[in-house]
Amino acid sequence: MYLEIQNLVYQAETQYLHSQETAKLKDCTLSLKSRLEAYEILRDRAIIIFQEVADQISTDFPQEKQILERVLKDWLLIIRYSAMAILLKDATFLRHRLLEWLTDLVQVQQRQTIDRAISEVLQKQLEKMPNSEQLALISPFINQARNTLLLANKVDKQNIYPTMI
Image (cartoon, rainbow, N blue to C red; front, top):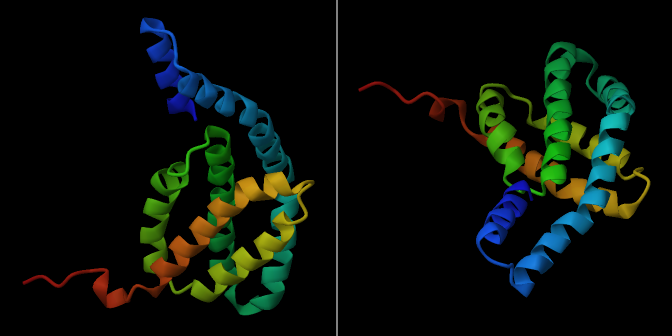
């Protein structure tokens, strides 16, 4: 969104915007209110959401305390970066800023079951958001993170470090 608005403003410096361009600008600004509301809800409720997720996951995986802490922190980052991606209206923000490096970390750990369980419990918690529009804004990012991490978990550890010839 930010880049879209910035580009449109730069265009407006040299010429009037055409109807399609003003419609795009209008869309960006009109959707900002709902995206900001979703961001604020995620910001304000992150601790409450994750306490419930942590309680459930700790019960499900009592023997995995050390890795659970790391994975929960990763998912908390995913929520934070997803909130920012919502605000920016940028589908690539989460991937470029977080998932690219997080995927590398995940590949050396065996945590597919835990990541899947956290994403499922987290989705249930997010379904308690005040309205479906906010859930619709966050869900694609949570799905993107879940799919990326679960795919990274499937990578064979032998393929992570190529052999030297």
